[in-house]
Length: 295
Ligand SMILES: C[S@@+](CC[C@H](N)C(=O)[O-])C[C@H]1O[C@@H](n2cnc3c(N)ncnc32)[C@H](O)[C@@H]1O
Image (cartoon, rainbow, N blue to C red; front, side):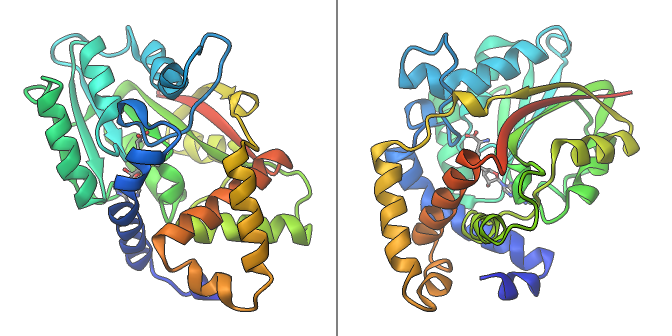
């Protein structure tokens, strides 16, 4: 699982990410945790989230709170980096008087998203571009960039973060919500195997600790304003997660089977999701919302 990925170019990695989302998006929308409202991110059960709909909206709500007052009304521009089918964009456009551009590598998502923006009545202020988020045009610049569960797909955060910083207005905010490495049990074979499965399954290109990210960001002129650990609000080990874990355990016992399964987006999602659950439960990974500001 690891040797093939070690030889993959960045372009091949991005193509694999696109294929993964083209193949899985309809299923994510039907059965995913954040199904309601089209979110393709995790439910976060903060004490004020009383239903799956509210838990799926938690990250959007937290992002909105951090953008309000920081994006000028009417001429303000927000970029949703890795926008899925536009759920966060719609939420932002309904709550703020701003223009929102979304970028996704998946053509399937871009098409579904365009229909959803029109149905939500925000197509005049929102648009979705199907492109690699590492290859955006130099203009326009944004007052805020939001990236929910997307930058971990980047083949290189060391390249992506300065690039995003250059696309922000001075004082602009970059809000990232994603999985971050911890230093716990570094080098332990079980941990490294688990992380390799997460990387291979979920098409992860970048895994860093928050401290590494903060250092990268600082070199790019971005200051870390807030680091909010949401891990304890995730619901791990639900019955369906336990079932998937069981199936993964059985298939892992067959030599070479996982290496073949991981090329298939459906099974890749199961393998990565199961490894992610283990990583979060064992404290090897954490789910954080980070707010950075360009100096
Ligand atoms: C887990 S989904 C999150 C979607 C959305 N942010 C949400 O919360 O509903 C990850 C998103 O990142 C996008 N993505 C990953 N790599 C990308 C790349 N290189 N360029 C553009 N989008 C990318 C995928 O297309 C997908 O939309």
